Length: 405
Image (cartoon, rainbow, N blue to C red; front, side, top):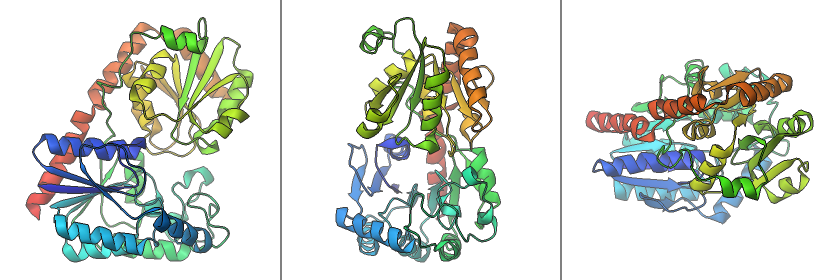
């Protein structure tokens, strides 16, 4: 069986690692795995296909900025991808993030509908359901249920300089995404599965939580060097990790926490740009983005709590990475973020409730963060978020769809 997945990145960031891990499971079970991607190029076990180049992406970016038509650029790049598909002749195709200035959704879906290739489509955000935005809950918008228009997030990713094409985008997506008959939608959270049922999509969704490599994300025994590096002796460590930091991920909330938490608390943020690090309060330790899993696991292990004050999210893999390293999670009640934890491994508070967030941090650091809690966190990750288990579910979907085809 030949499976080709499409995603913005490969083996980088949460969605790129998910595509890579699914490919690894396919290969381990005797199948051929291909991943077509838009940018970056980490090493991969799968055979890789680059979609377009920097010029194609720049033109797509210009189309987005000027005309608010994200997903409708990159025609030439997508037609070249289709030639590769004709050559490979995959038995099924796995779709992930289709936004990111690299793919033309109409060209791709016209081809998929014509060829009647089975499609397993994993939704990592809400862009597929809207006329513009990737998430709408931050502004309490429900236009996506009937007809997007006068979008309140036009200037946010994928940002337009002012033109609002949300009406046409919504109508086109509704037509395009319902054109495939042999389609299985997968959501990593029950929260997003529920949204799909309220959308224009005719297909229902199956929930498969994300998985991680629990043999890499695990408690690290030797932490003295890191503690010495950041002078963490006698400190309670509050960790935040994101691939891109902004107010959507709660960066301003961490800045507020740095002013109000007791002095024995040390906030560490991973994934910041150099500019962001320079602008941080001196009380926060800022670290640039890293692709090193061992470095991430070390920081997760050192942390007393992992805090995820996200305002827009589906099912953050950082939560389960922290659990796998034995660290309890404190998060806002945003999207599917609370689905990673139970009462023994963390807590969620109301979105934007910074006072409750701080109280939860202090409570878990001073009264609940024990060896027992660490064991419970690890056990939960092993039981529910082991990629070898979760991505076997994808394998079954691919094998089933291939047989039906």
